[in-house]
Length: 251
Length: 216
Image 1 (tube, rainbow over the protein chains, first blue to last red):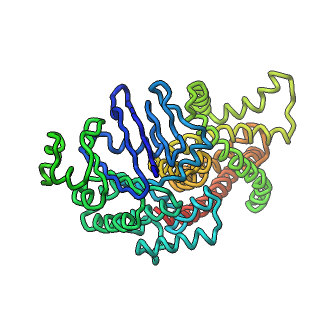
Image 2 (image 1 turned 180 degrees about the horizontal axis):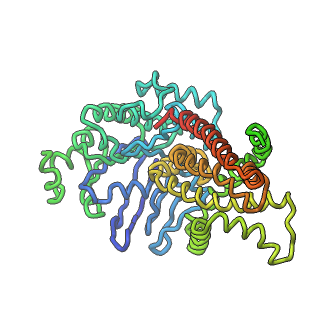
Image 3 (image 1 turned 180 degrees about the vertical axis):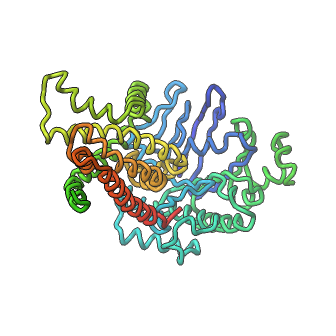
């Protein structure tokens, strides 16, 4: 079953085309990594998929439900109520965490499910405790974000996203703000999620990680998908000149 | 007239001084937030008109605004001013004037919030109102508290401007005593009163800041 379907996505910023005709399908349990140089449009694609950015053309569907449909090359968005429902299908983990600094770790995780999804308080608290346990942060429930390391904050933000019980998770360069040691912490968590068959789309600069954890790798440059396919094939033996050049330092 | 008699007489006006102070805060703090939101409106007409009003309120003396609110209706409609209406005129003029200053403080605070906070809330499904009330505003309050303290301290001293309308608060009474007794002492007493009131304000505001100090 397809969780996410993007077709012919186009996006311009002030006349500059940053995404040109991007199509992407993610099926249940699939882990897709998007790699590519800065400014290639990876993050913009993620932001279009998570409705943080509006696309100019193309369509977007989650679980077959249409969030954006294409009418004669122009994107038309669904109603606010429909989009609200569709938003609960996915979670997003940011590069710089974006935890709510005035909430404790526990409240960061429990408020959204209780407030937005109107879920039962006892059930949400139990879910949150389980997630914190899983993230190795059981003793940090009452701490505030500023008291945590970057790696711990990122694990809280993953727990916050998971508490909404999303069908899939997006990661936007989840380790780019972290030092190598803390990066390892986060990659371990994402690996564990992959082992549980969590559907994920990961924008990353960690090539070895992308190769090992993904089912599918996409290389983007200049707003287009240059090459995509099997992770080992793409990262170890790229065929396109631009991909070879980009990965030359890694290989 | 003895010193204690002067202090006793002037103290009778403290209730009115406090009335101006608290009523102005009560109305200008929420009004300032509303004005800030209008000022930041995406509608160009709304934001331009709001900006012009703020510019006028900040660019002309409070005393002038006080006189305009108090006597404007008389010149326009021939209405006369009663004592109760004096307080009303003062509260209207003060609230509008302070709302303009508070609006710019709120705006600075709101605009200083990182966009990531809005985005995190949006992805989690928070509505615009929920995002503002639960995520943005609480953090803005913490950020603007020192600037708000400044304005509140100024407000304590500005209450003395009510003497323009001969509204018998503490300072107006003092001024009257000073004239009738040919004494400078009432002004010294008024200075001490204001200083004491502001010490309380400064203490209360630093308590507020401390209570918001649990996060960064």
